[in-house]
Image 1 (cartoon, rainbow, N blue to C red):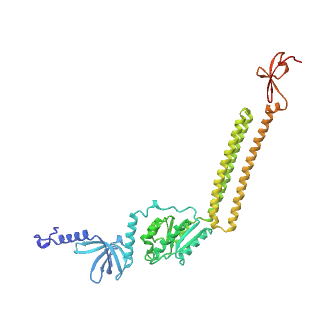
Image 2 (image 1 turned 30 degrees about the horizontal axis):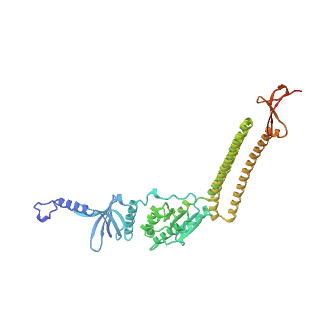
Image 3 (image 1 turned 30 degrees about the vertical axis):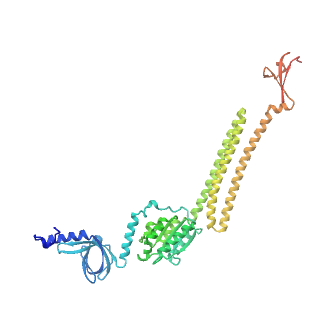
Length: 444
């Protein structure tokens, strides 16, 4: 249609042409809108579509909610609502109307709109991306809990925690979780636990409530505070069907406060089994390493007995092997002891004193047994080495010469019998402190 004012146009339009022109103008220039008003003349067709009028004090507009968008939203004649949809023109009657896609109760409608706008904005900025979420520690021993200390949520959370593990420490930061100032309180709690630096995870919990009651968790500043926290954050807000911006940003979302506790706490028996397994692996590793070194040294000793000319060299290798074995054992012991000490240190903060003393005594006993076993093995190998040295010294010709014996050589060969000598033979006599030359004068 030519947009030139009608009074300047010569042609005559059909009703359909005018209607189509108005239809294009409305649909192209208005688009999707939200309208507040009161429902009247509501009727539902056999096909499931809803037709009604939306009015205020000065005007009214026809509305249709097709079955495909009807989500059983409770509304009736006289309901105060906000509808969202697109304006179009129904050509058979030449009337314009709004095709409704969503209906919100008046008073909450603006909150829903703000929620969706913030959700879209934060999503586009990447605050919901899974790649930037911090992992929850496998073993949590200290929880920073941000909640109201007077609600059912804190009782459910603590009950679940202590049923699973009564050695867990829970530090509660009192915060409003509804109404004005609630978001600021929660942000202060996050900052507090980040400054303290002693908690393994932060939990933000609140019991169920209406969309309006939970709206403090849809705060943009709170979303950034959760995302910028150095400590992982778990949310347990409302019920399964309740979703807030805090849930989307949190590192882990639980459906309820109880679910939040269950998702971060390991059962006490599971931790005990882990420590027992760690101790068993420690025992096996040390025993295996000692057996390996024992076999290694025994192989060397057996070779030494067969090849005495290389005895000095092998003795040096044994000493170096013993030293390396000792250093390796010591390193392994230090490593495993540090791991046990680290686990024990964390448990010291949360376990009753008598159980802590029991674990400490058992660890000290294990350390003494390990040290005793190592010293016994080292003493045994040192004794073997000393015995071999003693035997070697007994076989050393130098010690025999010191007793007054001497060795006679002729032509650089040892003379073992007088029958090997003749008169006038030149001989060399070796004493412990030198040599002498002589001539054989006679033989008996």
